[in-house]
Length: 249
Image (tube, rainbow, N blue to C red; front, side, top):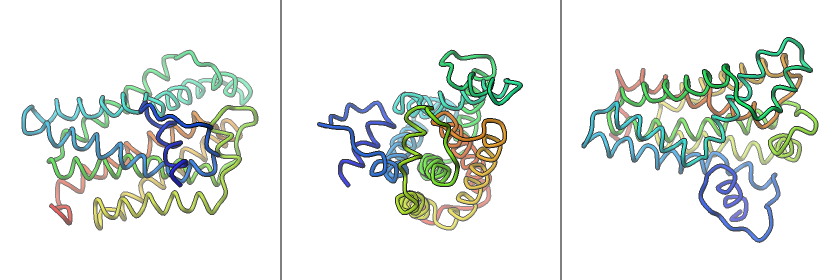
């Protein structure tokens, strides 16, 4: 268990975790939502703490940027590559673009759209809602990616993300998804219902589009799943926070 958690931390963050040998992907993936929750705690803590010192918009911007730095922009990069590949006219061309590390206009637009949207959402939240909402967003974004890994076919020879998906068992995926839901319930109470629902809808839409346009998924598409889920959760949190209190606030 410890190696799986450390492996997930090593993959999903820039924290310098040292392991004697790479952990098995099947042991690492279920810990993605847990690591996501810890990232959310850090980002949410920054957003909530800075609200007392600077305007909410500034606190939100710093928090979202800090989260991007902490993760090495791994998911943003996946979203950008996926967005670029949408411009291909054939499935072969789209797959070719997906493998290209260079960033095009669609990728730049996609990346900055999600960053701006997350900042706008967090800026509308009070400190408690920002903290809980960011935990839920980061947790469910990774949980959605785990769910897609277990249900969609992967592109052949398409990197680490596809390798993780190939070796992931349904049992391990179920553990990861259950962890994501449980953490979200603890953080947000009954809000977890609509938040889990919107993250699921986002994951289904992205995976269906990916299967239609690319024929399968890879690590970049999983990054897009995470980013879409994160954004959708924060949008719903901003709506809920306008009318309701958190269970612990």
